[in-house]
Every structure is written in structure tokens, then in C-alpha cells.
Length: 156
Image (cartoon, rainbow, N blue to C red):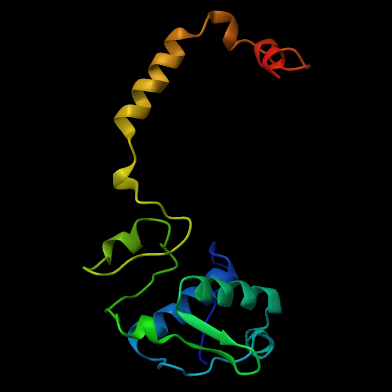
């Protein structure tokens, strides 16, 4: 398996491995039921810890890209290949909304840690935040006792 990682990148090694494998799956470079190298073998090839590879594999398994069977190893899942799209994860700039730019009809993004920010209730939150700040007294903005906030201590 040909994976390149950049040790000087701000992206973790496990995330880079994850992105590379996911790109290979979605581009069709890896076929249904094709076996992946064991975590030990891949870790040795890339000169990383086995846990780094396991983190990448586990995330891909959780998202349905890979399947694992006891005694057989880790393989590419069929479900994903039924919905292949022209998709390239750019892990160097992955933090920005790259995953949302590639969404297609009938494509569900199960990538963890990236919420659908368009649905975030900004207006409601800003109204609540403004109301709470307005209702606080000037004493609420001071440092509290080392024992904690008195009102909270009373409630507890």
C-alpha cells in the first residue's frame, strides 16, 4: 500500500493515514473486499506506532469504509463502493469546510468532529447570550471566592 505522510504537517499522522486510505477507497484505487495490510505491517512500513494506524483504521471502520472479520483481517466495505464519488480529501487544509464542499445528493457525511454549521442557531444563541449578560449584576463579573460561586454552592 502506497501511503505518504508528512511528519512536519500540523495534521496528526493517524489523520493523514485515514485521509490517504479514504481517498484511495473513494477514488476506486482500492476495491471491494480488498485486504488492507495489518496494522503492524503498515505501522512498520510507515515507521509509526501501531496505535497510530489503529486509530486511522478504527475511524474508517466506524464510518463504514472498512470491515473487519476475526481471522481474516481488514477489508474494504461494499456499501461505500456503491456510492463512490469523485472525492479528494486535502488533509493539509481539511479544517476548513472541505467535506461540506464535496457533498453530493444521497451522500451522508459521517466524519466526526465536523458539525453542520449552517444549521447552528446563531440568532437564538446571540439573543440568549445578550439577555444573560444584560441580567448579570456588575458583581458577577468579578473574581469569585476560591470556594466557588455562592449561588451554585447553595444549589448544590
